[in-house]
Length: 270
Ligand SMILES: C[S@@+](CC[C@H](N)C(=O)[O-])C[C@H]1O[C@@H](n2cnc3c(N)ncnc32)[C@H](O)[C@@H]1O
Image 1 (cartoon, rainbow, N blue to C red):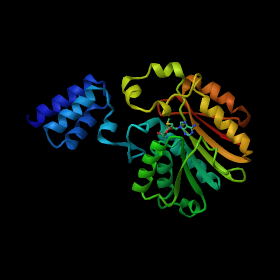
Image 2 (tube, rainbow, N blue to C red):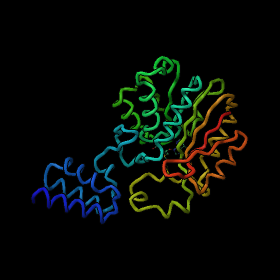
Image 3 (cartoon, rainbow, N blue to C red):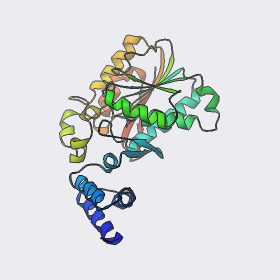
Image 4 (cartoon, rainbow, N blue to C red):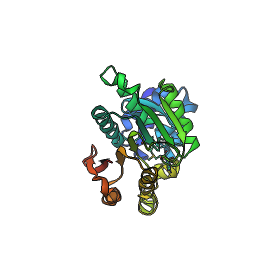
């Protein structure tokens, strides 16, 4: 098969599987496969709705490459704004501790620390800050740790297995909390694309009946710890953001839109 007919075959498979960015992915597939056998395997997976990121083993987020496998969510482009918001907050306040809650691949905290380490005014400040990545899934943490190591941040970011923030001592600290916890309501989860339901971890997506199960638990843990000084930036979705806002009402959350103009983030200070 010549290159052109190979490209057509790949593009057809991607279009049939409803890939939105089939031109970019088809080029990546050409670079990835070494022979006809490889190509057949890739196309079989594409036809079975497997996301390209899980086939090739990496994903782009905030212009950084992250290792991914089916134990972690494929980082979403909407989430990149959370990193931008975190950089802005970090610049304005002195935080003792930054926690990425539900870290998955580690994309948020790694993108944040890499940005803070760029030759800017923050370089000195980050030495005085502790950075944590938490997740309840050991398998997700294995991926996060690989990414932390790959980006040479293993002396800066500590990856810890726990429920939300329950094992961290944060009560006397000034803390920046970043959270992209599972927030899809149970019924909405059933309507997601096959590629998501079949391959991405349900435990990274579904947030109970209302979608707010984990954010309610986050609030309980903040209160149980008696945290006195924190900024929280969380990601949620438009269909439930009013309820998420009500949960954190006492901290007067501000709603922030994502790149698609959807109400997506809450920022609050306590
Ligand atoms: C929506 S994914 C976000 C992953 C990554 N932060 C990102 O933005 O791509 C949610 C993550 O939260 C983790 N998670 C779910 N419940 C948790 C809990 N109770 N405590 C800590 N992490 C949890 C999941 O394992 C998953 O990795």
